[in-house]
Image 1 (cartoon, rainbow, N blue to C red):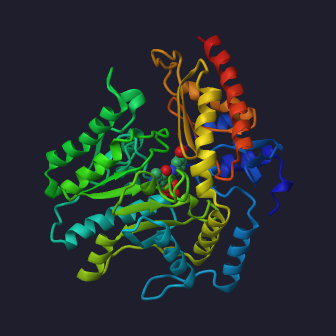
Image 2: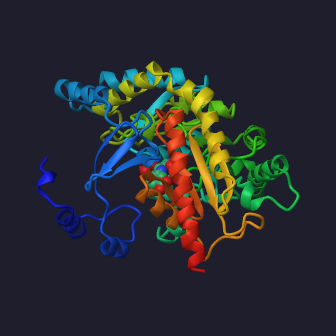
Image 3: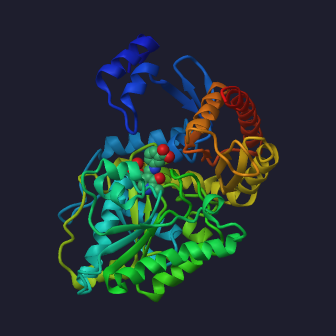
Length: 460
Ligand code: PXG
């Protein structure tokens, strides 16, 4: 590649002329020009101007083993030379998706032993939606096809993903969502708990919203409930401990399938291989992608529970669904190597026993008392910082969503990549972060908060 022959200005001009970006206001982008990330190593990314930035988002919630892993490049290279592609249709397959499926089944909750591949989380959720509806049709209940999801859920950006998700702006642009998906309240105590309501009771009330939606439709018409164990793009919303056990109880009571979307939480982020294990759940499906390859290759795996898988085999008949790249041998070779790295380096245990608890404590101690911080919360290596104008009343800066962008821009300028969503800063660093990296991150974020505070109150 010869991008080094181009100046930043030239690359930006070509970008503007030819490249439409995901989730971007292109008018804004033209005015600002894009930031060009050119290389990365360990926990750091570097831009075309040579700035070193600590990557608090692991790329986009995915680079769990950090950057610059030669083993992953070599696994891809070896597989490309031996067999760059063959499909898994028509009674064929190749060895790497087979071995990766076995590996994932060993790590997954006990009731899960099968895997269906795609290339993205959105594709995997499309598979999940079709599969649960197909399951009920095979059971002789084709009308049992309603899906219950939640407001502010993010399940991807294909039409199925956006329909399952609960993002209003995305629905408006869909021109017709997939029918029979409904959304209930999210378990977000910071904003939705009633005055005097404790976390436990709030969690039960949020779970009750799922039961109400089942009763409203009639259990015979509800296929499944889908949820991210911890809502990610919606703002790292960690549910109260009472929420998931109650949701699972309700699903079982009404024979509604439980679908977890672990595209963000899968492969160690919460201190277990899957957040299903963190919350002690036995879901019927688990959607995974991102950290399955640490983002080094596009790959998703829908983990399919025994009940659904057994029905496919018993009832037979073709499931008319799949992608050219389902089980792509190169992506799966990288996935296998990635999981081996996570195992070899004990990264899941490290998050659970060391860096996860340290991260939660550090955010609390270094940032929790800041004047424009309403709340910090963390689970594993996933964290959120609520930005407020007034700590006591939780009043936000106007207009909504603007303050977090100010914090983010100061953070990046000070060598810290954070993501802003609404009025919340969110973090999802690589699992290779050490206590020292966490301290450095807190230092840089504190500085960004100080600078943002000065800006935000000056402009009032
Ligand atoms: N489910 C969840 C829970 C996700 O977080 C997807 C599905 C879709 O995955 P793909 O691979 O199709 O993008 C995601 C993706 C953000 C952001 O801004 C988050 C995602 C994607 C893009 C941006 O936080 N999550």
